[in-house]
Amino acid sequence: MPPASRVPFQALRDYLNSLLSPDHPDQALDEVPAALRPELEAFLLGKTECQDEAGRRVVYAHDLAAWATDLIYGAGLTSPLPLATLDVAALRAATLP
Image (cartoon, rainbow, N blue to C red):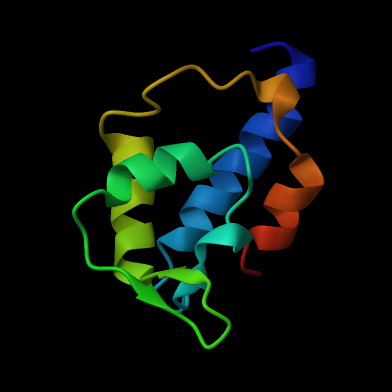
């Protein structure tokens, strides 16, 4: 992997691993990094949906964990995601400590 790809790859990996934490809360869909939202929305088709008080679509923590597991250990992304297009700061901000 070229050095320029290591930082975004690690940020993506850290973000997905944080979703596997048993302490990860339910989360509004619009809080998921933009580059990953289409993948998550496709994964959520047919799953139970809920909304928060502001009317935003909320994703259950167990669905986030299942999605992250699928990306890390299963099918992966359905279409290539150029690492150079990832917003590393947004991934890091969305990652649980």
